[in-house]
Amino acid sequence: MSRILLVGATGFVGRHVRARAAAAGFDVVAAGRSPGLGGLPLDLTAGPGDVAVAVRRVAPDVVVNCAGVTHGSPAELVRGNVVAVANLLAGVAAAPGPVRLVHLGSAAEYGHVEQGTPVSELAPARPLGPYGVTKLAGTELVRAAGLDAVVLRVFNPVGPGAPGTTLAGRLAAELRRAAGAGEDVRVGPLDASRDLVDVRDVADAVVAAVRAPGALPAVLNVGSGRATPLRDMAALLLRVTGARSRVLESAAGSDRSAGVAWQRADIGAAGRALGWTPATDLTTSLRDLWTDHLLKERSDAGGAGGRPPTGSTDERSDPGGVGARPPTGSTDERSDAGGVGGRPPAGSTA
Image (cartoon, rainbow, N blue to C red; front, top):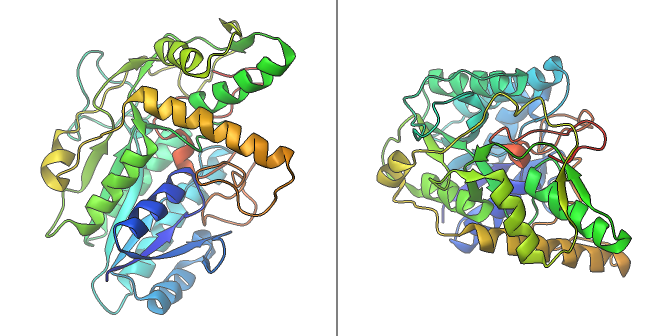
């Protein structure tokens, strides 16, 4: 049985990777600042020595890195997305035997792309803000390390457990709140289009990268291969939930996504290299997101405590192994992989 050291196992994507990998028969060792019961405490920013010790202790065949920081000052983003990756690479390189690294990158690394043309891995990377810049720096470190490594550039994951730092997660939470108060939901402009991919499909791509034989391309896009207008996504969520609230585009938008009007991943390379294709439609993703919200609400109302339902978002304060308490607004970085916007200004939900 192959063993995986999964860093960031309690984050949005990390939880699903953990579940899918275990179901596929892998021995998964969770690691991070709050790795959960039986997991391995690991802070990637503490230095390469700690990572090397963890790798020697676990003796994994593959290290999967789902950790990162999406929000904060430039210095905090550098610490969580560049320094942490450099330390991880040094620790993996010091392993006594061969270890594959599967690292999660972000579509924010691409920045503005030509509308109507799916973005391939060969497209120039021109990130528009500190988050995308630091994610690209992490990718370049992985590419230059000379290891058996692949970067999966994840577009915009949706589905159960999506946190409030994503548009879908934020809108679902606002609709639930508004339903009880009889209010409308106010969001920022929904003019953009994004490649929305189910988080479980992302997890399946990670598992495919773990088990793929031979060398892999340095970077592979992971998306749905479709560009969905965010206004259509919001309308679909209203239909799925049966909510009667209106969604009004009257709040401030997110600076982080303002410069990217359209994105659609070219996922052909991932299909060829991994034998992977996304399998979950957006309706299912949004329905499962809503169900997850209802389950968590009932659990909270009943004072259940303990571990939340699979994929729930109560551990959003854990950046998945990139430091002690994360900066305000930071989270597991897959909470907003495509740059749909981080934590918006007060009162905004776009």
